[in-house]
Image (tube, rainbow over all chains, first blue to last red; front, side, top):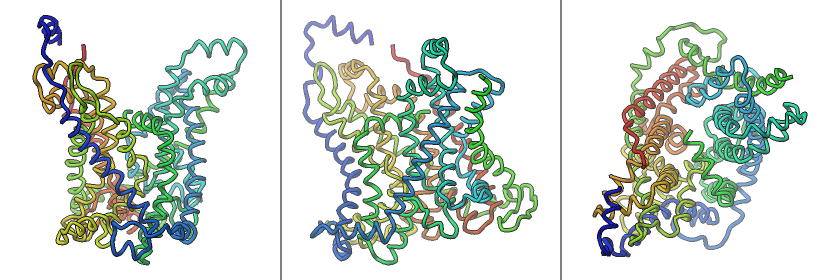
Length: 296
Length: 300
């Protein structure tokens, strides 16, 4: 490092070692654009196919739709029940996310700011959950949920989502609460603020950035969950309670038999829209949230 | 008051966590030593018989072999592609006296590459199942359009290709995230290091291997562990796209467990598979951290 720097200082008027080149950026862009195309083309193809008729899909997968057929979307929404599945997903994730964030923040705050007997045990019990593959729990979890009478119900799925989101949430928020200054809390205590008031009126608002990051991470984890719903939403009459991920894969299997390809593509497009739209609006926060999540 | 506060804040989360997470995990080990079928309330303790059976289960070994291949190829290919694209974003721009620059539109690429990461695995699975479809799929449509009709085969219906098709999807859905992660790590490398390397006459490839990779090694290591965990799982993508077929040619251990439990109702044996998977994950994580540990390269 230093050798190079002194070198440059002593050499009188160094000729530019590398003349400005144009080729490298062009090559870079070719590769980068190639992958960008590879990423987006399947998605664009699905959206375009959702407007085509089945004949058009069958004769040439690459053709453009002759006209926009919204009726495919209507069929997917009503007959294939994508609308209902979307609603179920929204209900479960809203409930689970609220519960996760509330319980996660409560536990993390106490673990970060209070010393008590069994403190370490509780902390490691929560964070240790991150190490176990969910497959290990599948069989017993199925029976735990069934014995509670929650199999194939939305509240059951909500509770399970929240429980499996807790390890990372507690881990992340404990670290976050520790970084917040203690002086504010002390001042509030002196002013007669109780423990509860301190948490809800002062600490939670201060922890907002951390809550948003972990909230985005949890939202995607729960919204995109696949294994838990297919295990827990089975049994008689459970189809009415299916979430989007499950409904869509079932649709793929059924439409394969019935040959309603356009309906399937429409269902897929409807399922894609909320997440892609949300991502395009909040892409910076989403990338930070997910990166923080992986680098735990 | 303080005690009451701690209790009211800790007990509800602990209760939820205990019932739905801790208790299933502990029960899994116990169930794995029984011959429980789930239907009858009675079951017998069979000791390690399930694990014995696991060793002789040809289907399981077949599935495990596929997880092994995933474990080999998924991290390797994903990380190489990730580093390649990330370095193009960070230092693939023009080079002049001031040093090297990132490409224009780096922000755009980062946004686009991230798409598969936010889509649910169900959408990705269904989408690719349709992409590979023999008559209506986009891939065969392209092959026919350029006159390569002979190559337009039934990708998922052929035991020779089904596994590799699944691997390709797994790579496709993960590369973007690691491009973003690596390019963020590369941002923190001081620009003058590249400048120095260029002045010393190092080419771009040499710079990537000798300068960039050692400096983002920590990130690569983390990426490796996470991709390994995805490779040991692989359940959702496989189940949706091929359901392990044709004739178990793309089966993975997670799918074995799922079918053993919820298809055949052999809950004891399925739990034994789960326990085996747990130790496999643990071993792989520890092993990778051991093997990839090397002295940290300190800046300054």
